[in-house]
Length: 281
Picture 1 (cartoon, rainbow, N blue to C red):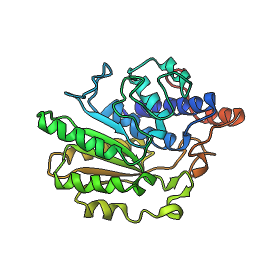
Picture 2 (cartoon, helix red, strand yellow):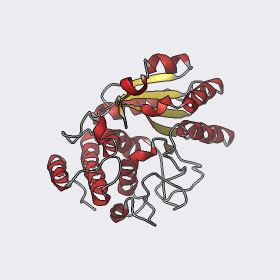
Picture 3 (cartoon, helix red, strand yellow):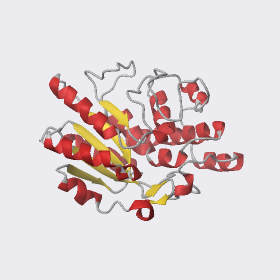
């Protein structure tokens, strides 16, 4: 298991990267990106077996699919800080004719990206397909996916959940960012998700509850616990409680920061709260 303090230092830098990317182009989704920072840092820097040299078919390594593709700023930062492409390329976020589009795409051939995402509800189906491919090829590695809780309002998610259980796809670990917020407001007001633990349990999944999704030690422990439950006949689901905008006090817990950019004063205020640890791009 990785050193928690080192992971926290990386997470602080990734949060700086997120806010600066969105500020630079005055467009993007900082709230969910900040909330999922600890998870993606733990995944890429401790839990997942992956190679920044990157092979598209993912054979011989773990694979990750970002279903809620609008939180691309956090993924791009983690990929760059993991060595998939130069950190300086974060300067090109959401610029025309560059590889770092607002939602991840495959047309630009950016290392680390295996599916275009942003049309919500599709990532679980893709992840299940990749996991079944690994089984067919006797590849013991795992598939990870990440979803927003608002995304669970898409019907395809529940078709995929039913299929994965029926087919005993036990080499996949899906995670839901259960922050209770979506673009138009709290999920309870837009379309209440109800008891997600009971729902996924009823669909035949093995559930890991992560109550502190913005506490690095808790995130790492939950991911390792989820790994220990694979290979036992059930797909695994991590239900991760986070705060949208975690790490920046004026963004935390509000759906209003789902998809807006900070102004210069807000950027400076955010940077004052986040320690530069690896060097800014």
